[in-house]
Image 1 (cartoon, rainbow, N blue to C red):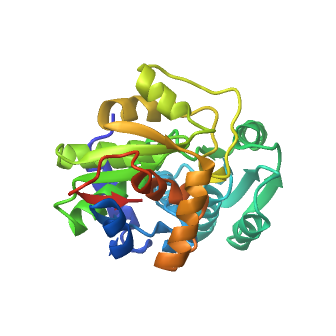
Image 2 (cartoon, one colour):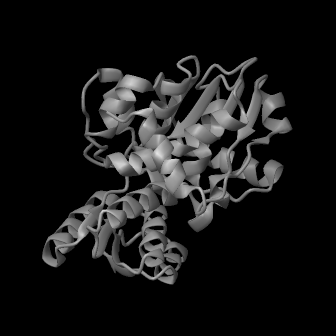
Length: 300
């Protein structure tokens, strides 16, 4: 299990690389919910998402150990850019396998960071299988987007930042696909302040972690169907799920319609272009999936 020192070490590796984006309050969302709602805009992070945290932490740790000559990853887009950026920063070759449905903008951005991109499969899980095949052929290091302790530790550095900016936080709401972000943030925050609730949010059409959490078991789904491509995962991590079961307080789901409404409100009221997976926590708050009235609430 990850300890607080692992998150602190990851934060030290990342301190001169990532942007520490301060929390932003939303008067609109606060008035709509009766809570004090804060937003952590990781869409403004380097490479466009929180994923750079885990990828960079993993690559820098392995590079410092002298055990890195090439990396392979699978991703729907955000992890891909984080891996490509981190690998390029130390002159290591990176190959990224992305689903054929990946938006062209994410493919181009990944290539722009120096990676070789291979398109394979229609969903993440199929791209993952192809990446494992390439990794074995090239004897490269595989960088899993969520089921890796060093990746989870990197994502969990968000917990350190949130509590540093808002020590009075009551609830932190986190989107979940494979579970790396939720596992990391929950494990980090609960080891600092167990009072703070950490709640995961999944799309109704990709709810393996929600099912796992509520059944106290490990669940994979046969298919996924959601507009939130960044959290459309059939098989969550066998490392992430136990961490979530240990540290998270709840996992809720939102519909694609609720996510779409949140995306629109973030554009109209906050002037932020947020992809559906990033809008899921806002959807959960606005639709009453989490009891937030009178609380200080942070949406990732």
